[in-house]
Length: 265
Length: 67
Image (cartoon, rainbow over all chains, first blue to last red; front, side):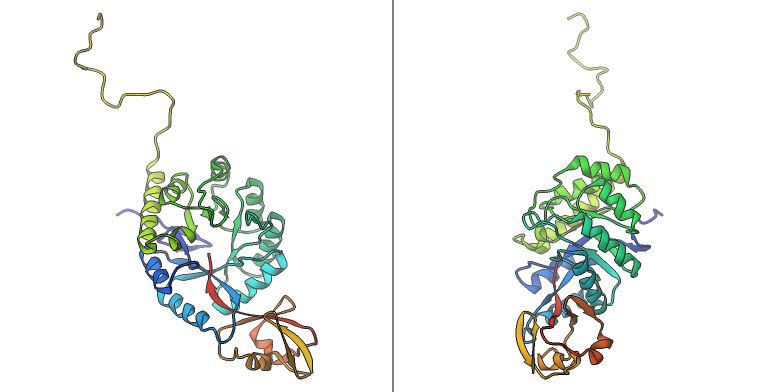
């Protein structure tokens, strides 16, 4: 019997390599159906100010609980290490989990992570016992520093959040995978199509986290299923080992015995 | 009376009001919330002992979808 190919994060194993966000769906029903179709076991969510009269927080929470998925709260929107640390503490209390998707944004235009504040926040949260999954750029040295800080998984962007630009810098992403071999790498953000997710997995990435590509599809549940299949296909391709690429053509059909071919013609 | 900001709205409260009372006054009692005062997280077990001061900025948050 084959050994199951599990994703391991902070010593915890997951069957699915697809992490899904819970924002931007047209309806709560769309979200629930998409989560089910994705077979995700780990879903992201957040905290925001809301009026006490708004019942959305409560009904959202009920739907999330019904999925049975593990929760990955985020610190989306935080602009400093201090903000992110405090929001992480609020999430830990409310959701009763040490897991945190750490986001510290440094620029409004492309919502690029602030590497300096991110590292400070990661160091502090790990000291406080959090399991930190940092949303970071594809900068190799930043990723190495986050790893040194104790992050047992890293989540470099494919492209800025919500852009659907795919894997913008394949050189950086390949270098990351080449240099960081002992820590799970999850592509987070910028993915538009299942083929892009499959590509990331073929490159040896361990998992993919996305939200908009599913939530904004005409049929979110069908798109979630498509991503699930693509991520599995990409993972299988990586494990199977891709043939080396080459510049010159090489016939796949044997040349020996070719009819109509004569040496002296 | 003193003024505090709750989720960006100014409200008047009695002096010596503690956070657990503010949660009731603002309608968040029995709701799933987490709270920060002046940007600092306040754990639930401290609500009854946390006396609010004039111009305190209080954030009361609830679960929402996120990516």
